[in-house]
Length: 82
Length: 395
Image 1: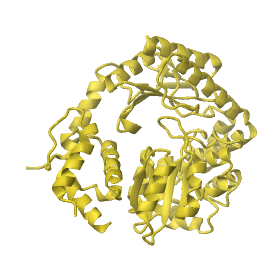
Image 2: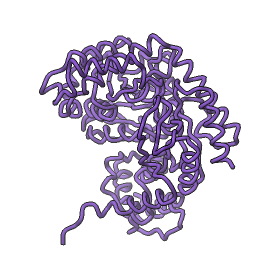
Image 3: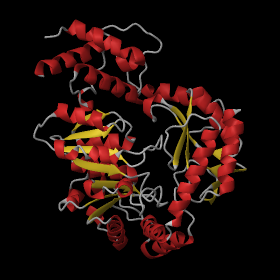
Image 4: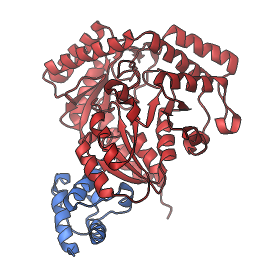
């Protein structure tokens, strides 16, 4: 199974286009708050994550996810079900 | 310590203040007087309206106004409750019958607003056991209706049937129903869904298809019935949603279908059941407007000629257009929010009102000067809009 730390690295990479100010991205980064991404931007980012890992992340599943680490855990759980 | 609930909106207030500090409030213009479907007085200045979605220019039609006045006299100012609780007025039923006839569909339900039509229809059609696949550029009312449904929500890339195909494949079959939601004309950029590409997926993935014709009702198709009418695929569209606030020039919305259980939705849609029904004057003007649109197809010809004229004129100025197809929604891309506000302000001061559209209300974080064309615009007005764009935006 893919390690969570590897997923974090991928997510950090996928977040780069959504981080024009190049703020440091770590596991505890609060994606919408610290990167100042609006609601549509978050959904666009999630779409990139879905396609990279070839998994489904329903919109309503990610409503409570804030940090890179939380999203990595969610992705890991989806991959383990695949 | 008490948490002030409005504190979380301070950043929004700061943004609005930054935008309005540069000139007029483009997000809160007050029309002091309406002169015609295309002219208003704001303060002491007459403005050409090029951002009101008044596609058929029908808001001052004497037949519609007479119908509204008659309804006020005979049925009063309001219905004071929902159709489930208070019962319907005869004209609600008449409007549903007329609309169903116009759309060549068996069933129609009217709502108090177009927003509620999407809320009601989507939350009535899908439930927690189902999945809704929605286009990424969907209007907020579609997003909100989807959320209200409790269904699993899967977003696909805008107008990309191959992307939907992939996501339908990923979703597999979980035993629930699948609903795909498209729009006839997308409200911000003016492009339309490639319906045939999406319909081609129906057999393989077994879903039901809903098209929101808010901006295309009255506009698209040889009969003005919307996107399905334009491409000859009406029979493949399971559910149609529309609004009366654009081509019909009133307020309200509708859902329509041939599905034999469709009327059951009246007892399942909270935005239909728990709100007051549309006011008599609005329903009466909607009925009258629907008749006018059918009797005067030249309005549809006129809006397409006007759209072509404005689109071609703005494109010839070298402006970055929102999409490469002509429709009554014509958007011009701006490089950033500050430029958008400055240019909007310059247009407004020169006597032209367009919509200032900024993220997150726009796709792909675009900043737009969004125009909407009316059949009531004269050639002189269209040419004036182009000339003002040249002076205020290009120069």
